[in-house]
Image (cartoon, rainbow over all chains, first blue to last red; front, top):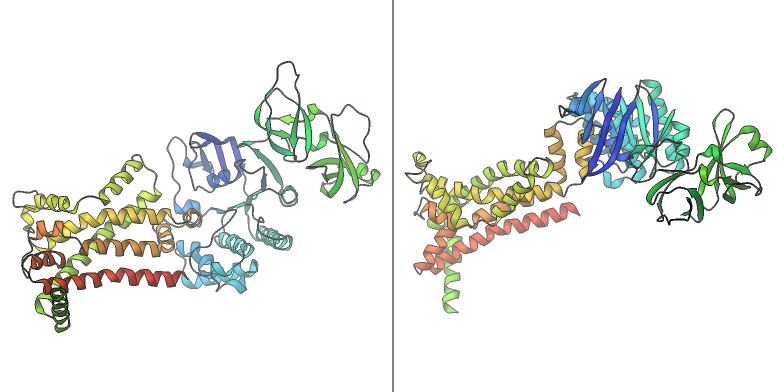
Amino acid sequence: MLELVGVRHRYDGRVVLDLARFEVPPGALIAMVGPNGSGKSTLLRLLALLEPPTEGEVRLDGRPVSGGPARARPDAALRRRVTLVEQRPILLRGTVRDNLGFGLRARGMRRADVNRVTEAVAARFGVTPLLERHRHELSEGEVQRVAVARALALEPEVLLLDEPVSSADRAAAQTLYGALAEERRRRPLAICLASHQLEDAYRWADDVRALADGKLSPVTPENLFRVELPAWVPGSGDLRHVRVGTVEIAVMTDKAGPAILAVPPTDIFVSREPLPSSARNVFAGRVTRLSRQRPGAVHVTADVGVELVAMVTEEAARDLQLAPGGPVVFAFKASAVRVF
Amino acid sequence: MDFLGEGLRRALALIVQGDAEVTGVVLLTLKVAVTATAIACTLGLPLGFFLATRPFWGRRAAFTLVNTALAFPTVVSGLLVFGLLSRRGPLGGLGWLYTWQAIAVGDVLIALPIAAALSAAAVQGVDPRIRRTAQTLGASAWRTAWAVAREARFALGAVITAAFGHVIAEIGSAMIVGGNIRGSTRTLTTAIALYTGQGEFGLALALGIILVLALLVNVVLQVLQGKAHA
């Protein structure tokens, strides 16, 4: 098992990651979601053993391998067990074939075996026609696919993916996720991916974790917004209005300055038209997506001036006749909005 | 004008005829410059790579030191080597003073900061994802360095030509530690200075033309690099 223990990581003195424990069990399929700058990429680099944490340590099978009191430094053999594909991966100089074989040659594998493995992994990821091409002859999506194939050619125990479909269209994303699923059927493989796209996270991961400002968010990862709270005026009470997208969200807080707002999807009332209630936040809009995340529960995504996700039962979704493009009203109390 | 024209005619005649004096000076200069460049780059390129990629205590000071050494006066480098190699110096036992080896040692001191500072800059210019990619694919430190060096190959080639250009055109150190002895330590630059003083303008000009031609190698390499980039 790969894990971070007691990690506080700093850049230029600023804490960018603060995690008491973060575990990637064998064979797990974890998605990390969170806004830009929430620490996802840093977390992946620490897990990939590419930089040691400023405080705390990275453990592999219970053994400290990076950081910690002993300032452990991982060697090449340890790094081969955990491989990272960056958000904007880069191919090394040479052809796609050279790239797919790079890590295998680094292991000292014989040329004939390198060729055999390279061609097999290229076939699995549909990059065989690209084998003799150089990086400047590939599109961004092709580079991303080759980078994932290059990582998996090494048969790592843990694959870390930073926004794996950021530059791929939907069809390419399906192909990539399909190939990853196939890989997991072939052999034990834990995958930890960072994604902006909640839908992807829910569809492909067993375990969705939200990261906000370097910390694991205590609430589900939907409806997280980074905002600047206005200064509190004495005597004005704790009810504040904060602009998010084109709407103003009413929140109860005495905080000021940069903050994260979280609206739990289960705290949003869904209706077809505004209803009299105590909710201070009532937004009308259109349903953009309906997805079933688990039996009996439907995630309703709507554009109400900002994209919000609400969770309702299958029965409620049916009674309200919710459908993509149809009208919807989301309502939630100011006190339902978490501020941290 | 006659003086210049006559000097140029004589210079070209000496080059075309393959004058023994000119040939000897050229060969010695090349021997010294190639040896010094090879040693300086063998030491300086890894040093530059280390400075550019490894965080360590005092790294900033090391960068400042190397960058300052870029502008170190070559005459002072020569003095330093003279002190080391003179009979009473710590390396006097080698008996290298007033030999081509002494000039090469002086040139290494001059070229080493160039190789280190410019290669550090070249490596820092490589996309950091290259290094991370090689590492995450399980490459050893050497293989990772090789992957980075392949990306910076044109810049590192320019570092080698810059170091070569510097040592072949250097005079201060060569004059002090070499002594400008005919047939033994007379290099292109020290010979030009001597022959000009002796009124042998044609001979000095011939050597000057060859020196400039040697430096034109840099231009040719730059053009080739440009074509390879295109």
